[in-house]
Length: 150
Image 1 (tube, one colour):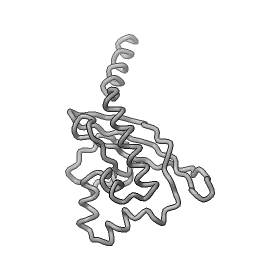
Image 2 (cartoon, one colour; image 1 turned 120 degrees about the vertical axis):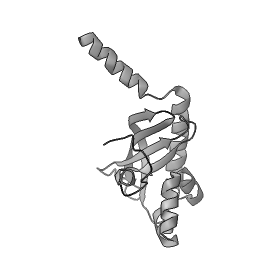
Image 3 (cartoon, one colour; image 1 turned 180 degrees about the vertical axis):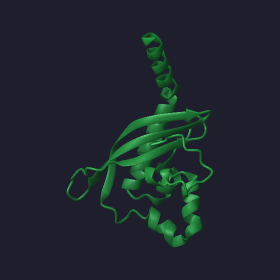
Image 4 (cartoon, helix red, strand yellow; image 1 turned 120 degrees about the horizontal axis):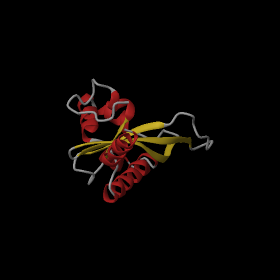
């Protein structure tokens, strides 16, 4: 029975892991997203954001869109990402990522980590990002099937 439990656990871990190519593409996209946000490169920041989120803010108003993506007055940088959980269903992959928040003026590391969800809908070839709070808000992205249940 114990052997069966161990084998089942390994099967679950194997089914939720990324292959080398998927992981490389996630890391490249994540680095691009964090750099775009931290350096306030608006076009890249929007391009790495999940398209449904971008459309939602565009539909609200120009000022809502601008307020969401204008990072010029933000003194918090995001770095040191850690993948916490990966869930896959078919060609759709969702990854929960913790990101350290650092005040760029005092270099103080804030206690609270930001959480992001990385989403790939093409088996890990391309990745887009959603802030965790937005992802868990069921009134947003109604058609999105949430694979991360935290």
